[in-house]
Image (cartoon, rainbow, N blue to C red; front, side, top):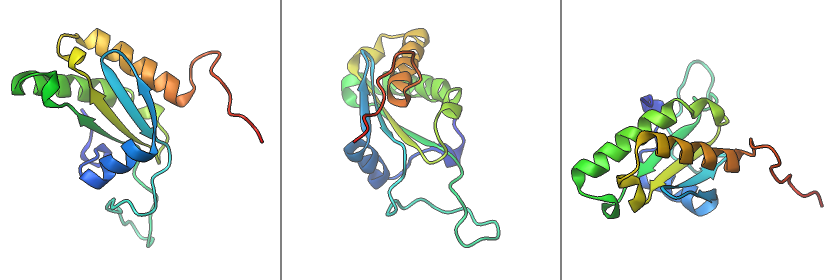
Length: 138
């Protein structure tokens, strides 16, 4: 389960990640990843003494549209994704935002398939896989 402070909740937060972030498509999922939050993101700041404390950690949000299925199917897919990502949230940097969009194929996929696609997408976005292309230098 994702803690409340690790969830994207507002439309502008989702929009910023989808428009400005990197994308990795898999057969059942599309992951949108933004490693650094924009300064204008309306994230509530936890105050513990200093005027601006650092963000609490990475955040994630889910988009499971009607093309995936009826309400029961969409909620099942969302619960599965939330559980799977909760175990993988430690892989993301503290300033990262991630949006996971389910494709219609996710309706018939089990947790093992969704987990495999989630791992593959995160590997691609984070560059954790062996032989990952390195950033070019000018």
